[in-house]
Amino acid sequence: MIFGEDYSIRLLDPSDSTSGFKTGDPAAQPLKSFLQNQAQEFHQHSIAKTYVALGEAGDATDKLLGFFTLIASEIDIRGGYVVDDPTHANRYASLPAVKLARLAVDSRFRGFRIGEALVDYSLAVVVENVVPYVGCRFLVTDAKQPAVAFYEKMGFTLLDTEDNRKRENPVMFIDLLKC
Image (cartoon, rainbow, N blue to C red; front, side, top):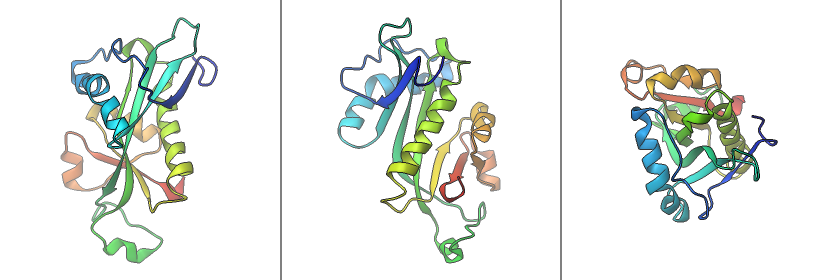
């Protein structure tokens, strides 16, 4: 599957059907539940914005292949990361961020690099539409332990504190001024 040819990514629309989305993993059930039960309402009321990867019309994959959700956030970097510029920003307990709050690919479409395309698209949304207009230094996520290697491959860094390394869902980030 090729992004732009076999599928596209766009904001969630009220007409999008989410009922057939499959996670294939009981640990990912909360992601499916969010998509099917809360994403539309949160999207409509600007609590969270959800983007969907959809198979192109007429294709056998004319369905929801994956999704991600973005929210406003912050990151506490004390003891885990030093901002080189400006150095006085390090005196603050937290710095502004956008959180990649949810990301999932339908289990039937894993292995087609859709998850990578979703992360790349989320980064592009933040870099092109948030950073130029709003103070925002980081893209952050709370990664499930099995997904840490995936996020590292995508350019995220594990917040290097003892407490974070022990978390079930450790904080990972991309410094947006370094991408």
